[in-house]
Image 1 (spheres, rainbow, N blue to C red):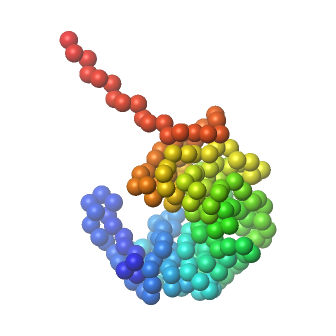
Image 2 (cartoon, helix red, strand yellow):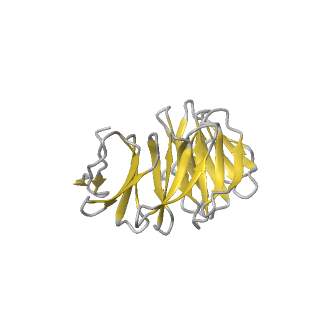
Image 3 (cartoon, rainbow, N blue to C red):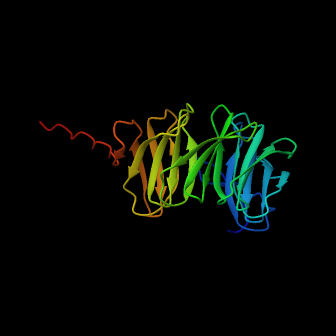
Length: 241
C-alpha cells in the first residue's frame, strides 16, 4: 500500500531494490521467466515493467479504465496479461507495450489471469463466480468453469497444462479439466475465502492460502471429488536400546 514493489535477497532477506512510480496501491508483482524484468499492477489503472537489477521503469501499460489487479508474463517472456475492474483482461507486447488483445466479460471484472505453460491459452478468475479459459491469440472463449458459489479470486494451470486450479470466496479451491471444463476435485477445509492457490512443480500437490490465517498443502491426485488436507506423516521415533 506504500505504492512500491520491492526486491529482496531470498537468502539473507536484504532489500535489494525498490521500484517506484505507481501513484496508488501496488496489487501484484512478478518476475519475467528469465529474471531480468519485473511486472507490477496497481490501483492507478496501469501495469508497469521494470529492470530487475536497476529498478528503472521500462514500460507503462495504459488501457484499463479501473484498477489493474494483476499482471503476469507469458512463459516465454514476450507478452504480459493484465486484469482490471473494467471487465477486461488485456495482453500486451512485453517489449514494446503495445496492446495485442482484449477479452471482455459482460457480467463482472476479472480478478486474476495467467497463461498456460505453452502460452496458447489464458485463464481468468472472475467476480461472476466463474473462471474462463481463452485462446491467447484470438481471444476466443474456450471454456467457462462453473461451480463456485462466490467470486473466484485466483486461477492457474497445472505445470503440464491439463488442469486448472481455482480459489474462491466460497472457501474452496477446485481443480478442473483444462480441455473439457469438468470439475475433478473440490478442496474443502478452509474456514475463510481462499485468496490464492498453486500447483507444485510436478503437479502432484496443491498449495492454498486463505483468510483463516492458514496455508494448506493438498494431494492433487483425483481419487475422490471431496478431499481433505492430508497432513505429512510424523518423523519416525528414534529407536532406543
